[in-house]
Length: 252
Image (cartoon, rainbow, N blue to C red):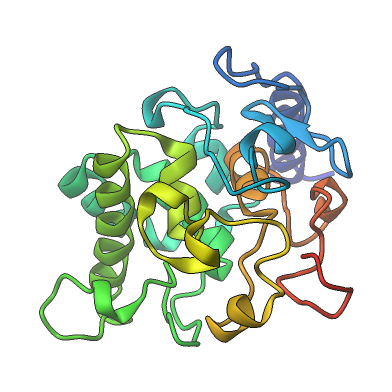
């Protein structure tokens, strides 16, 4: 075996060991390590049931996790593993992270969740960060390109949500995906927060693709820890594993 191959294998073995040994967040209820999926899904940043508090009741009531105390792998480990496609955009994550006071690793994790780190990804919210054009900060009303503008857009959306929620990463990340609470004042779902039946209701479907109720678990306990949630680690997804589709019934 060539020495370069041994080096790659050793790096991957070390990464997997780090995943298995990830420290649980002391502020996260129901946390476990390593991440597990299914109806009892959990990971180092809490259980899915805790992250989705209220979704099965009268509306989402996001618990608090400080954005600066999340458990996650390093940016270097991420680039050496599942986040390799994101490495080409490193300068943009670091620039936007500095501009909006956000750990660039978090922006890279979101980019993988949103677009699989594909700056050419289309849709109504195109680009690397899948940022709604109404939130573009370049004054153009469109910011898929330049790529820096798209990352700035995503970082601004996340920073705004953090500032509005006292730095609550759970609330802010949910908001990034379109989650809402009664206190957000959206008027949606009869003035309630997001519930598990809302995404596939007539009102929910009228607002575009159904909200992904696995989003918080996929992000905080998946990509943040270096798992490939769209590939080999898809079985670690939580109980709302329906790919933002309502084809499996009324609950997604």
